[in-house]
Amino acid sequence: MNPVCVCGELGGSMEDLLIKNPVLLVGIGGAGSKIATAASAALGCKCLLISNDKKDLIHNEKCTAVYVDSGEWVNPSSLKLRSFVEAHRNEMVAEMSGYSTVIVVSNLAGRAGTAMAPLVCRMAKESSTLVSIAIMPFKFEKDRIFNSGTALRRVREASDSTIVMDNDAFLDNNPELSQEECFGITNSAIVEVITSISTRTVRPAMSILCTSRASSSSESSLRDSVAMLYDTVPDAGTVKRAMVYVMGGDRIPVGDLNKIVGYVQGIFQEEGATEVAMSAMAATDGVRVHLVASAPQKTRFDRYDPLGDIIPDVMDWDEPDSAPDIKLAIPAIE
Image (cartoon, rainbow, N blue to C red; front, side, top):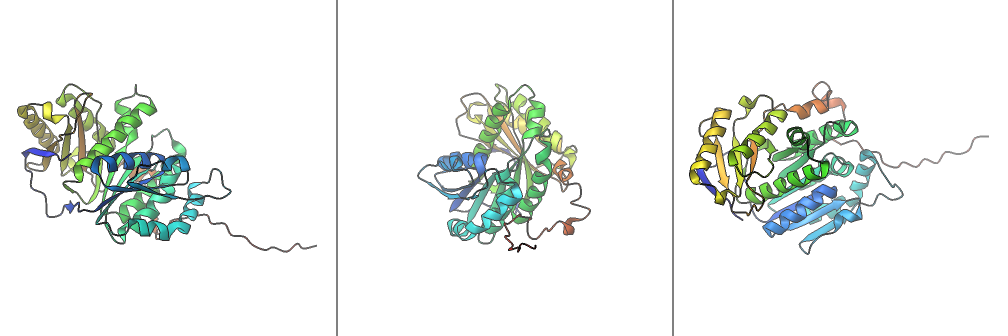
């Protein structure tokens, strides 16, 4: 449903990106496909699901699917899986053509996301305005940190706008939650924000999506979202613009919404740089506040690839690494 803007300076900047119809949602892997399917149902738009696991490709009538066949490989690495994507390039490009805006959702904690998201984003950017939404791993997933960092760099390079959900920062502020509960809350937040930005503009470059658990108090929810932001961007003074989405805001007095504007503007010290959207979407489990803040040039994610700033040109940047099958006929020498 369309958000209703209240309070604050609400005019969009000339630098903002307009979300134009027709819109295509692209979900990569398990989490990406689930989020894209839910968001497309809410928006009534088409979606494309891409995965190497057929279980991820269960979809509604508005979704099409591309199955990336990994052949005899049961559990391929990200690099191996990336090499199989090229065989489906023409099919993916054809499915994404004809849309003014493409929104790509991927979980960069998973192999499918890190393997496919950079390539799919580059394909989509050739003909459409591209908004990418990336989910980052927990810090205890040590084996996934590096791949997620390098994949995020490539996704950002290809995208007009990138929104990042940092699951690790959310879990740090809600340590009593299980991983499944964490995924449920953050995935719902992504769906709600996609539904809201579809009727507005988005900022170019990168933004951080922060959210809260359901609460009876909008101020408490805002506090949780800001705490999550500080985990990802330690210096909040570098944030120049923020958008606040209040889910269930139709039940909150306008005076309380005005207080939220004042709180956020005070935190970021940018008068008139904060917009607040009151969502008409139902929130049966209380009030939730989603904060989308424009990120500075450097975030914690840059540390995931410690060599990226030192020797970026050595890491095969223009063409993402892959591990294709190369069969060589080697004669037996006796």
